[in-house]
Length: 135
Image (cartoon, rainbow, N blue to C red; front, side, top):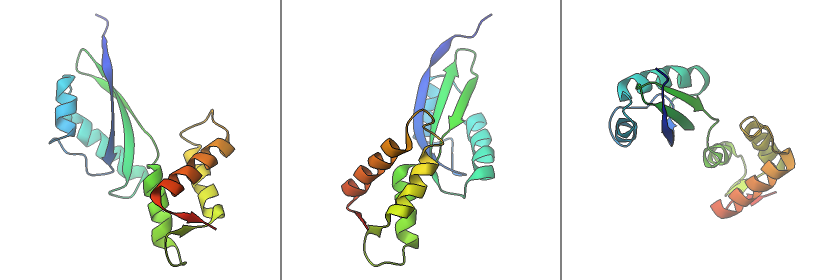
């Protein structure tokens, strides 16, 4: 019997902190997936590549027989900009263009078909909405 595709779940989960409770458990339960299985697999895989507590976007494809596939993307843009601000030696909410370029290169791994300049311009907009100045 061929498995039927039920839908896609998109959610941001912190690496190493996926738990069966809300909101993740409810979302997976609606599609008939076992939350414990996903949480265990996600936590093991996420901690291989990321530090504990990094917010990672996840795309989960659910199937009718209770199986699933998932893809973990890189950390959210807001998290990366916040990390730059924490390590920033300058006072205030200031980020250098060079540091933002490095974030753009990292984000390009998730957006392979998008030119780097467009990702960079998107990050400039994100900085402006977060109240971060560029120097």
